[in-house]
Amino acid sequence: MKAPDDNARFALIHELANAFARRLEIDELIPYVLARCREILGASGVSLLLFDPERDQFYFPYVSEGDVEAARRLANFTMPADRGVAGAVFQSGRAELIADAHNDARFFSGVDRTTGTSTGSMVAAPLSCGEARLGVIEGVRRVGEPQFTESDKELLEKLAASVAIAIDNAGRFGQVKASADRLRAEVGALRRELARDDRFSEIIAVSPAMSEVFRMMEAAAASSINVLIEGDTGTGKELVAHAIHRTSARAEAAFVAINCAAMPEGLLESELFGHRRGAFTGAHDDQQGLFKAASGGVLFLDEIGEMPLPMQAKLLRVVQDGEVTSVGDTRPHKVNVRLLSATNRELESALTAGAFRRDLFYRLAAFTIRLPALRDRREDIPLLAARFLDVAARRHGRRIDGFKSDVIEVLANFDWPGNVRQLQNEIERAVALARDGDAISLRLLSPGIVTGVSGVNAATIPRSALPARARERPTMTNAKGEKSSVRPLGDACADFEAGHIADALALHNGNVSRTAAALGVSRVTLQKKMKQYSLR
Image 1: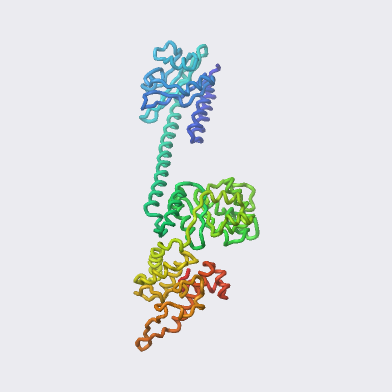
Image 2: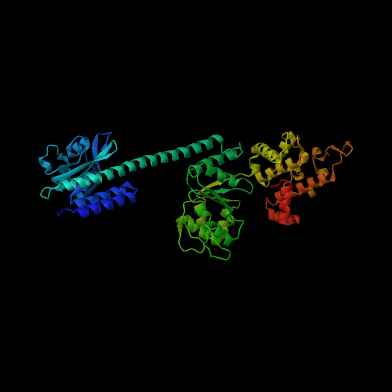
């Protein structure tokens, strides 16, 4: 073989230096380095022998060999670390040139017997990084081929220093990565354990129906499967989605939510997938879209059953391919998003009616959690009411002396068509009407709640139909400081208006637009009233 000249050697060192700078993956870098080294040295084979301290032996993780069968056999071969030329170089820490391996007493013939080859000349250099000795790099030529030279040994020695640093760095990186993976797994396990311990603390429940929901939530949090959360309006579907995300392996990444019923199809596509500047009128800048914003985390699609069919087809492509294409763009972009969806509709019926794509349904509903209505978990009502009372009292800056006993009984027996959200609004309203230091009494509840008639406007309930406690008029103080059973007209009107709006909202399941239409006022006016009476 023709010996490489100095220019070729210099070019090789420069090339490999760039390779060390470019490549981070050791399994890509080392085979490339060995192949180029074998080429420039004119060697039959170049091998990397790494030291296994637990077994006190060398193994051959990387081999560049002209004989494919010899390379395959070496991949499974080990040898004692104190044997052979490699053992001597490893112990001394100095490179060596062996002109004729078979005439060297240190030569370990087991390698030739394993590979079926006959070694002639050898060069070997230690792989050292600081005080650590990692192994040996060897070049061999067969019997009958030209011997290696001192310049070959020097070249291998220089390359060995860079290879050792790369291997050491890879080992450290591997340890860090393994530690990070272990830590990530431990954090995920701790989150799930914490979820079991605190029962998803933001969700107040002790009922058997919710115990099953908690069990399903724990299973969903421990997986990466897409989840469909079903339940009536106001049952807390988004709260459940947040809890699943918070206790999952994606907890450190984003949670992004969108209400699919709140915007028209064209705007929904842009919100989800993003758009390029100039894609449509008003698109003055690029927008990345919620899928990209949530990449690595969770995208919560609320009211998924209201998504138009054309958008369902576009969403299906994203779910299948893991790629989104922005409006006005032609290039798809990879995204890594877990989908949590929610609906208050019976999607099975929508499938039959052709209003929802069956293929998309099975993608989104791989894991389904059904939330019970509040009337099916009455054991939770006192706990929920107490929590809402505490929050509302702090928000309004009031000292509220709890509930009177008959109030809890009334709350627990009401059917709550608006579910948890309606209960929260009712407590907010009662706190807004209460005086500092009061306990919440029946007179502070909406008339429809007291009579147990769900969804009936206060104006339709005669006072004579109310229970005796509710018919009692509170004792007031007039301008002279005298006791009076007559309330100020402004207070009475405010009470009636607040109750009337609360009942109307309950009748329309909290939908502001439909409630405003039923009351004959604008949406803006109703929102102002809701804010005034703390009915949000």
